[in-house]
Image (cartoon, rainbow, N blue to C red; front, side, top):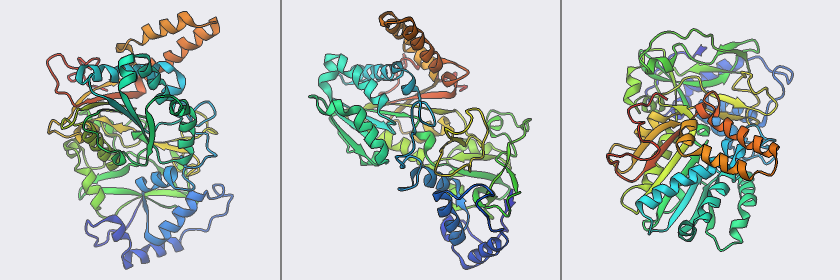
Length: 467
């Protein structure tokens, strides 16, 4: 990995540091030694790569967070913003739990209804989903709400947080039948903070595979503090680099400081990681977000998302106790610790099990990172405004909610043996501990105080949290 020469740059905001004259001169010097590419080197530049090249030439290396934001959310060329990308489902680059079986959304709805009925059954409620995908999960949950007279009469609004016009169109098509019924209205928002407070309404929040797509910064602990790993232009096409780590961060956080036995994947790219010459304001801030990070040895790299922290606090504010209250479910890739090498690319044209360059066709592929659920819970605050529950692995969560009973009911009414087998196979994928059942974690959040009995199904999780 390239290391930029140390300069007398204090821990100011990174962008202002990079814009200083001597920094500009250094970047121009580096750029002059970069061989001019031809389209055959790594394929033609994508639209996002053209933006990256111009940005790096102007202001210096990019953070991984900026890279993810450009690739996924650029207004014109971002992966989620381009209607030409079939993101979800069998034609898309990945398949999510709601797209596999209706049972997933139904059981999430059951948990939310149970919390509402135990907390504020006489009050109306609303439901908010972050990153609703094709609208399948919301459709399944609303079907459950409509089956019970009490909840059907009390549901007031559906709020969807979605920035992509293309995805909004898919969601509207999926949920349009709701608009034509005497049912709650649907509102779209660009951000969670745009949703107004409703102190007389119980608030339900669902975030399924939303947080893993939020931008992360990659930071490395040095003897001088936390530095940021940035993205620069490779000096030539033969440059080889390894994505982290010098030390296995997962082992360190579990009290094991052994080096990783496996070799990181080496790839060739027109992009390469570089280390900031000094701690930046962002790397210092993120490196001190959790007391757990202080125990990491020099050389550790971790992915930290300030946006995830902000989102967690916004969820807490929506369901906090100064109103009727509420509850939330977060389901995502991740575990109760930080990771340093979880960034992954998802592309339909690539083999499902192939390890690929994270810089593969920027803007044309999905990029995600594991969620640090321990940091997520820490971000909810320690002032008692909400209670965090869990985490549980998805398979265990669904089993405790009675997934087998629901599957048995669906199989009994299935018209053919083929359909019966499909139902069983689909749910098996959701609970498989070696697949989705083990890869996804589930965190519950509620405005209620935790009593002696705890909250179903998170009854014995707090002291057995090795997920």
